[in-house]
Length: 194
Image 1 (tube, rainbow, N blue to C red):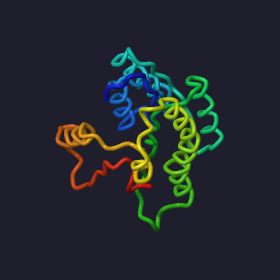
Image 2 (tube, helix red, strand yellow):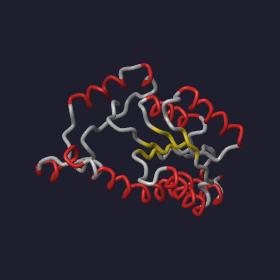
Image 3 (cartoon, helix red, strand yellow):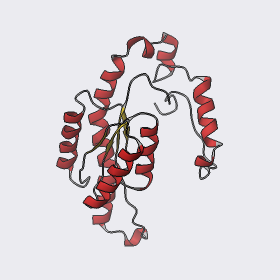
Image 4 (cartoon, rainbow, N blue to C red):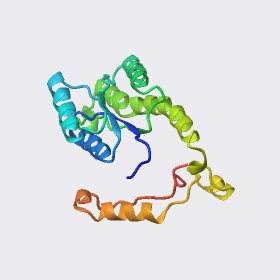
């Protein structure tokens, strides 16, 4: 992922596990990273130290919030804007938790926690970030303004390049994608998702 300008990525739930792995991958590609997590301070400190030591050319920041509390999500958004007044370029809604139970044993309290963390937080962050992302994209002009044919058929208004298809195929054929099997991947500029 070669970039002309450094992009800013907010990765929720990135103090450990998949989120931390995504943060490392994006930092390796040259992104500044905003780590998010609701974890004990030593886990947060360890994650930040790990990222900073391996990606010293990137700015690594932290913005915490308990995603069960909507006011904390709002406060986190304001904190991110203090760090990056123009907003972020990449939002990874990764935060979540796993608590397995039979449906008949699932409490309403657990249900509400699952909805808050997995859905409501993602909705709120996307709603907040999207207008800022659109504004940043518009500032890039010609790179994102192509002919009307794409405007009518493709939400990104960009053709899919050979290199993009090849990059996905290369990833899916790599050891890093060893656990991805039996799934379909659309590379259509958002056409099927619109």
